Picture 1 (cartoon, rainbow, N blue to C red):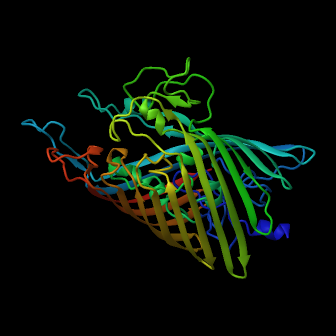
Picture 2 (cartoon, rainbow, N blue to C red; picture 1 turned 90 degrees about the vertical axis):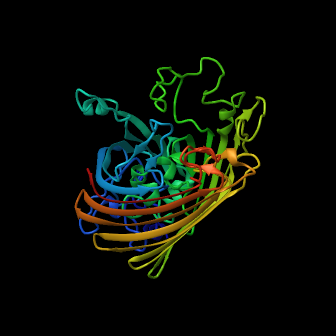
Picture 3 (spheres, rainbow, N blue to C red; picture 1 turned 120 degrees about the vertical axis):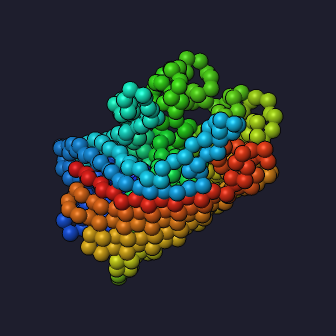
Length: 493
């Protein structure tokens, strides 16, 4: 029975977009094309691997299984480069005044990419205890600059930095489960792994890298907490149980929304003009363990977030099934300042929402669907007080044969959107994604992607990111559309 359950495991899906891992799955579940050519596998793992993603190790996999009294050390990397074309309602900004101040226009084409580094260790004590750690390092980019003396390309690269995206350790035993601690994926990301949410082809669709070619306010929200930084970016403890008759349980707890950290922080990279060091010398706004604050923006942070989820994996003849469902709840930082209005000083509700999905595979075809709904806003953000609950549903299909995988998905997302619009309007978004992946050779993947999306919120100006008024030059930008297409490569080792 144990061998059958291991053989039917479907948790190790395709590595796409913001995902840090992929590994082999059963032949009845979506193949991990982005993580190795099926005809000549070279499945390069990310931070998550076949040793640390579930209670028992899954042999064979991209990472060697340790034996008693040994460790396995790995250093992997990934480089993606792609050319993209895009078109959106926000590609042109109208200016004001006789000098047309603020006017700007984007080129429809660009080239983009990134590099990522993955370090890890997996070990086994002589008594059978498994343990290890994993690190994912990514590339941060600064603002583009120009000069009359040179093109400033060297200055642009000089502003790039490296940062830690995932960093966690784990202890595991086949009979009692696995405990992971640090900055990493929770039950939603681990149980779904991009399969039911349509991320198992091209570069991840709307949760991939192609949206970076689209102006931020025109990008459709991807609300599912699967391979999302909104889930794995917080420091947490995660427990995954052993499987029983195809079922396993996942639990997690995060005391706050801060990443794994200790003490004072560095320069505020979210504000390129800031030179102030942040820290917590006394209880104040920005402290990672904050419980209350007189600053209204602190009230948007969750505290004591927890997730409980159940997953099923199984095969019935030629049919493979992956299904899961879970609930996330939390508290939030109490706002103790003066309340003015929903727009000026919005207050927030605790997180309280469910997420689930299913994928059914017959031969080369996989049908997938996912849903999320409840007291949540945006991507795992708190729902503003007085705002509406969010709900999203998705459907899609994937076809895989040899080194090819093609797929498409569509979802809708209804949410409160801007907290300033509570009691006035809500946000509605539609998103379509389609793409193809082709494994050219071990460590070399070609991918093609297309995205189309729309966003609407009445009386809200997506161009300015604020409530619109008839006096605005761009009033009426409460409907925006975007589309983008790309062809690119992924090289990994």
